[in-house]
Image 1 (cartoon, rainbow, N blue to C red):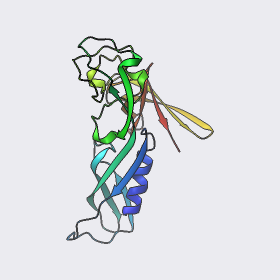
Image 2: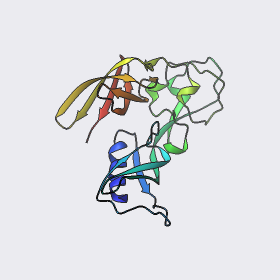
Image 3: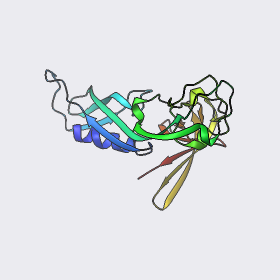
Length: 202
């Protein structure tokens, strides 16, 4: 089951930026769960595969039960930091930011990773130099808005599939966004301007 959880999380995190490291914990030693031959893994509603989380296991046969296993997802990659203090209302230029390497999951959930996400936008608040830059620090125009119909484009080696869905969260261009497809399935991808959410498949 732990190997299956690792495979499940690997698939869930393939669209994340940077190098992903997954560690799956153990079932409680005193658990009274019956043996299971058919099961499925799932993330509890609203949980994203990021940082310390709990992953659900649902036994389908022979006896139904559900349990949760702790897991930790670390993402190592590049993120933006300010090169010098910024004043509230200041428009950011290329010289105002630089990229640093580190653990993205130790930063704010909306930390920015690409200069194009920041250059040309105004700072909402005054920021100190050397501070990680998050979307919440800037006045960003949303690429998708919660409740908006969006086009979900899934791409993989040699194929591309488009589906319709509804955005469950607002996100600026390049940020992660959750979408409910017409089938009811909830997926996560990258928001793009024009009401598009991209998903990269293996």
